[in-house]
Length: 237
Image 1 (spheres, rainbow, N blue to C red):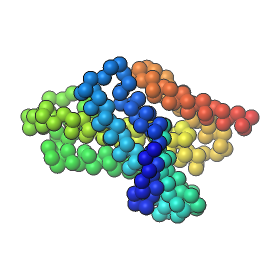
Image 2: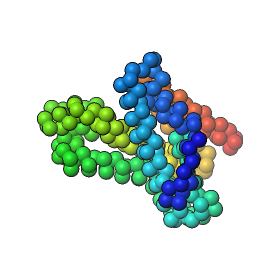
Image 3: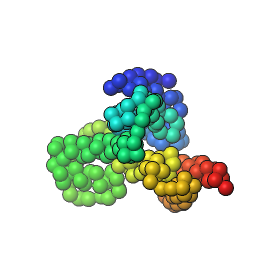
Image 4: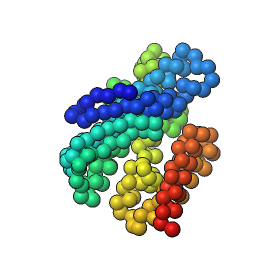
């Protein structure tokens, strides 16, 4: 268990978080080599920092708009930020929820900007397109290619920051509880039963997509969320 305080916000990182991050990194696939272990470690570092940035977006904006005592916990399925004793208007709660993915997208933009300043916009776009969509292009400059070749761990970490903050941000905005998209849907869609119905349909679609892509972890994750939301529907029957 890791505990510390940053910006006046207590943070707790539970052991299950490290296990989940390690599973996502591929650390448990076969017998990893020293290089594969390093790549997994870089992914875990990027994931930890990115999720903390996301949760601090919730916590700091929540403290600003609703007061209370902000807390952050990183656990097996991600992170949780909450404000004990906070009082929110619906608008305030919306901005508090949106601040999480917003902070992640801001980190993505910052990393892209650093690449653009260091290597130029063209190289930054080519590198980002490859990391996000695996689109290969011949437009990368010899200077950046040389840097990539000689500083692979650094560029792998940069790529992980781009990938995590873009794709996890997109997935987190899906209308599935308890994801942020589901919490935003909950603010504006009534009755509550319909929120759970939307969540089940969306999560089931994501399970099918994950199986098509061969991502068993994503299929399990959204399958679990589909089941949890389906159970909530039963309470309205």
